[in-house]
Length: 72
Image (cartoon, rainbow, N blue to C red; front, side, top):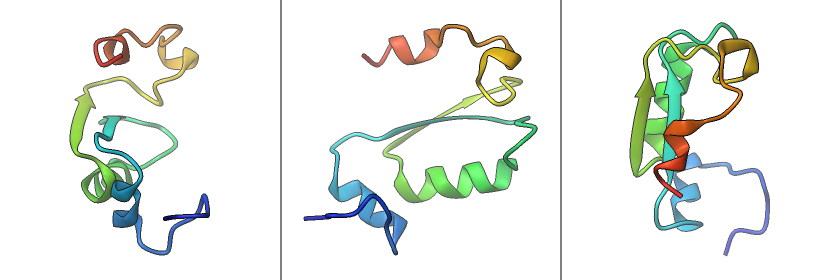
């Protein structure tokens, strides 16, 4: 059992959930694509690349996150 929010080994996150879906963008102005992709490769069971989605926040036009609704 993992008792901390922080992990020494990101792959251990997969022990906490059966399905982990990572949504990320190819043009985030704050987080480099390579960092997003590396994180998703380590923790996700499914990856969703949102082309041109920016930081996936209201500044990028995401007042609602319709893509995630499909997974709820």
